[in-house]
Length: 208
Image 1: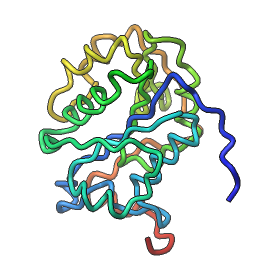
Image 2: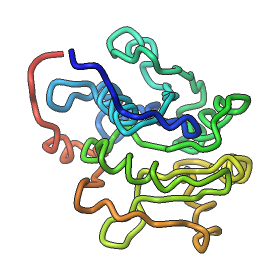
Image 3: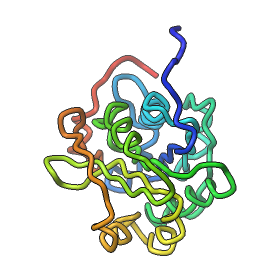
Image 4: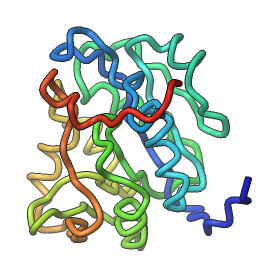
């Protein structure tokens, strides 16, 4: 195996939200879906590492024990969200709380159900970090999307605003003038795996 020589960004942690139960997928947890023979949770965690995140926190919820048993997530901090059924907002709150007390000055937030976003897009957004006040978002043809980088000065406000499935959306709406957009449409596709129809976007690639 070729050694990973990607320069690490010591100030920004990857925060992977992977707790969803896949309600519209018939109850198939998204973390355990496969793309090119790799579990989505493994694929996204690896992409964050490859982009340069020095640490990656992974928030688990639905089928957490199975994810722990099946997924190769060595080197990641696994964080359980017992309230995952409340929606993505709860996972974002739990994830940001898990970073409190670390030396992270920012969190690069990613969603497990967006396999079209890879290391190139994560690295671009990561590269726009300056300090704790940073608020950065990937853009696709000028429209805001994922991933989003939240400087630690924003964490308390995001935690307060994150409810249901909204995640950081309301906080970002209120602070839209402060967001730096980084175009990623040439290196990533921001589609979600939400419904049975979306499963066609997942490519087989060998058994896992």
